Image 1 (cartoon, rainbow, N blue to C red):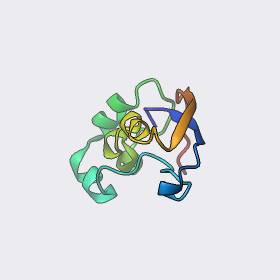
Image 2 (cartoon, rainbow, N blue to C red):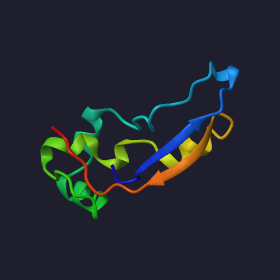
Image 3 (cartoon, rainbow, N blue to C red):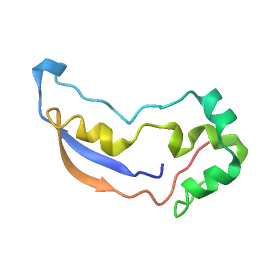
Length: 93
């Protein structure tokens, strides 16, 4: 939620079955994230983003996910970046 969103256009690479990843993917499990991070970590990592910052969403902390820029960089043969959007609000149910 803190790294924003990339809008991409697929390049139709047949070696990847004309597909690409659909998100950064998790760096650690939800359980591990809950054991590793605190509410203070969540507040720090989501500074500038309007979102829940309570213990119920610690498993969604940005550090629990892979670096989105690195994921996009690894897919330059699969996608063309159209836009990079900055997150300002995140709603978790």
